Amino acid sequence: MTLLVLLLCVFSITTGEFVISGILPAVAADLGVTPGAAGLLVSAYAIGMIIGGPVLTALTAALPRKPLLLALLAVAVIGNLGSALAPDYEILLAARLITALVTSTFFAHAVVVAVRSGSPERAASTVARLAFGMSLAMIIGAPLGTMIGQTWGWRWTFGAIALGCLLGLILVAAMINAPAEPRSSARSELRALGARPVLAALLITAVGNIGALAVFTYLAPLLTGVAGLAAGQVPLLLLGYGLGGTVGNLLGGRLADRAPRPAVPVLLAGLAGLLVIAWAVADRLLPAGIAVVGIGLLAFAVIPGLQARVLSAAAAAPTLAMAVNASGYQVAAAVAGWLGGMIVDSAAGPRPLYLVAAAVTAIGVLLAAVLRSHPAPRPNELEVAEG
Image 1 (cartoon, rainbow, N blue to C red):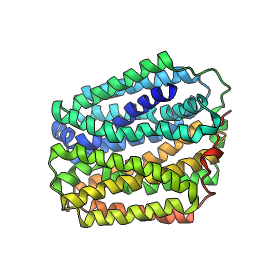
Image 2 (cartoon, rainbow, N blue to C red):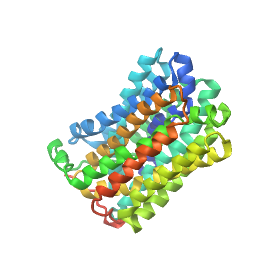
Image 3 (cartoon, rainbow, N blue to C red):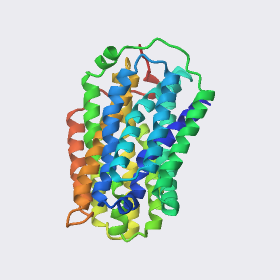
């Protein structure tokens, strides 16, 4: 039951991150800003996670977990409610930033609570199941939130997310039992992050994900403005992207177990190639839709191997390591929102975004090949230890 409650919380919080892609045009039109400026809402969320993840996790390293989880969820409720009620673009930007500050820290602590509530030898599978909440946020949360936004307005989308976070808060208060435990200091947590494998994995995470995230952020203008998809059908493609991401997450984990060293560069190379193909077929709806699903699959297939490396290399500080790894992913999201916005707002239109995304992903391939750290551990070799 602990895992299910935490999975609901992860689903609710991360839906707030992913849903902006589907409601981006509506937000831009309602607030009177360009799609590129609206895309900065993604960058603001990412920056909040980049800063909030490591800093907040380190500062709260010695606090009891359950009260901390409740406080983080309360901030998520307030932030999403503020997004729903924001009178202008600046307030919405601030509300997104506030919500993002607690996202990485909540996920990092939720991972440790979930693992400690189960069998130690099943730590990796527990982490994977909790992370499934993120996949559900893409498969169900983002399309559902987009449909809510298209039916009643984008503000109702954030209102629904706030209700989801509030439900999670109530369930955590009533059902989660996080017993007192020895906790490490911020200094000891930070010391564990200096290992070369951790730094290498973080760099690859940051660079290798920029391309796919740029395409995901601007899927709506890419599909409606280039491929000719009707706006009402965008949620279906978001669903396809999320389903591809779920399959990719499972396949990527197996591949990383069987061939840990080549897995990341091979998957990134496949993603770069598919992005080029997506550019070539961008004006044909069916091939473009298939390419979108494939991009989701490959983009998520690369993640399990990187997470396993980080957890193994920073076993003495798994909470902070997971938060910092999430921040590396959000560095990519921040750059993706900014870079993609410039391309979408340019005279060339959104289509060249596929080629730029492919070029950046190719840089990730080179980094993954050069910065090859020790192999990712088998699931039964992972330990989540702390203190």
